[in-house]
Every structure is written in structure tokens, then in C-alpha cells.
Length: 275
Image (cartoon, rainbow, N blue to C red; front, side, top):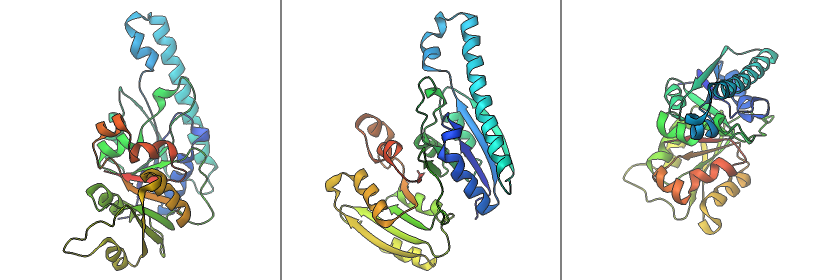
């Protein structure tokens, strides 16, 4: 089933976000409808001190957020208008105390594209987490580096799949099949020992039956799993990394760190996450 409905979430800086650029490229390719969305909750300052704030201060904070939203909306509309063949598009504002409101909305789209998290001081509450959206929405999410610019070749031409044979990786691969270009080159990376084969076919056979050329790559985890994955993506010339999100519990990764957490800050190419 082709991609027909895309949610493009901003991280609080629409003009510098690579997410919008990639979302537009995907929308053009699939003739898909594009919904730009800005999510925000109350700022840390407001949450912490709300009971002590006067009505005038609360109104001032709300006005500041409204101005930020207006700027993001204006940038979105200007980018759409500047497109040679503008996609069907609309803009949506979501307010909530957590990313859950964005995850709920993402369930009714084929794909959510999120630019890397906002870096400006005082705008952290406009910063949606793609891993949380992938975890709670049941839909694929693409995390896009802040300065990402689509290349001259179509997106999804060279893909690295981080494969451990588990559920989340399998789900991510299935979701990624919608993006693969005809003649795509897939590298299936395993960090550590090759996953034990079951009684059926393996992932290389599956891709081959879809007419997709795939090769297997196995690398030792001597550099750490995250660093090994990113080095392999560079080696393969990948324009997309596909991986499962939170095969281990989110609580454990928040507490101790993990591959999903690392990719939020270290990935230098678009990452498709599914759970």
C-alpha cells in the first residue's frame, strides 16, 4: 500500500528543520497529502511554578507560545506555496501535557516525519520525541537530522536495516518496504552473531522474493552497537537507516541508555523507527 497521508511534526524550528524537507520529498513522490503539525505543552517554568504565577504572567507565556506557533505555521505555508507542484496540505496545532496527543494523531497517518529536537533555549516544550511517537502510535516514524537536505538520488535507494531478528526490527522492515525505490540496494546489518534461523526462510530470501537486492553484513560490537550501526550506514552509502525502537523496555533505556536513545542524538541520516 503506497504512502498517501503524511504527518510532518516540527521540533520548534521550522525554518531549520530537515524534517519538512524530507516530508515534502516523500509527499511529491507518492502524491500524498501532507499535514504539518506543531505540538507543545506547557514550558518547564510554567509547569513548575504555575501555582505561584499571576494571571498576567500566564497570559504572557501563552501569547509567547502563540507567536511561536504562528511563526511555524507561516514558514510551513510559505514552503508549501514555494513548491513547483504544491502538495495538498494543511496545518495542525496540538496542545498537551505529553507526547501522547501527538502519538494519538499519528495513528491516523501512514507516516510521521519528525525533525531533530529543538536546540533553542526556552523552546524545549515544542520538542516532540520521535521514539515516544513510534512506541505509542503503532505507526512508523522517520527521525530526520536537523540539517538534512535530500540528495539528487531518490530517497530509499540505499537502505541499511539494523536486524537482530526480533519483533521490532521485523515491524520496521515491513514498514520500510513502502519506501524502497525500484532497484533499491539493501544492506542487512547484524551487530554481533548472526541471528539464529528458524524453520522458514530468512530475511534475505524475503527481500529477494520482492525483487530487492540484499546483502548481509555482520560486524562485531567492539565500537558499541550504536557506533557500529552508524559506521556501517556510512560504509554502505545508506540514505535511510531502518531499525526497531525499544526492543528492550523504554524505562531501561531511559535509565541506562541504549541504541534507540543514541540514535535520537547521534544519527546523521534519516532513521525509520517502528515498534
